[in-house]
Image 1: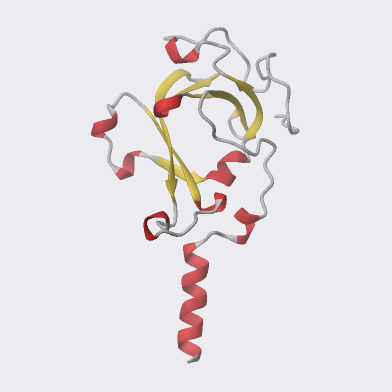
Image 2: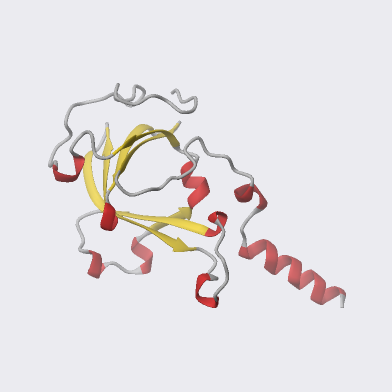
Length: 161
């Protein structure tokens, strides 16, 4: 009986959602949403701009890397949706791919997937739509510094290099 209880506890801990994911309170609660432009901040990388289009298209604009077109989607990280269960926001995974390959050529290992709430921790600001025209752009609209965000954004949380 003790072994069965221990096994159940280990299984529950490994299958998530982790308690820290359930209590997260990101500055932009509805991330990700289609037709929005997000300012992301990570102390190691600085500021980046990400546009998420309807239909799963995405554009990443980074000061050190220019524009990279890609794809985004939300997945059921715990595979409970197929069983008819309600999926919590903590169980959602944000999956991204940035690169030149066509969507039909991508395999599961090509996607970078993270718990949605953990990815939302990077969001520092949001703008509706595509104010920089990133969806159709081949080059960045203007340069911006790694530690200074584009002036169109108003920070929703503290972020500084």
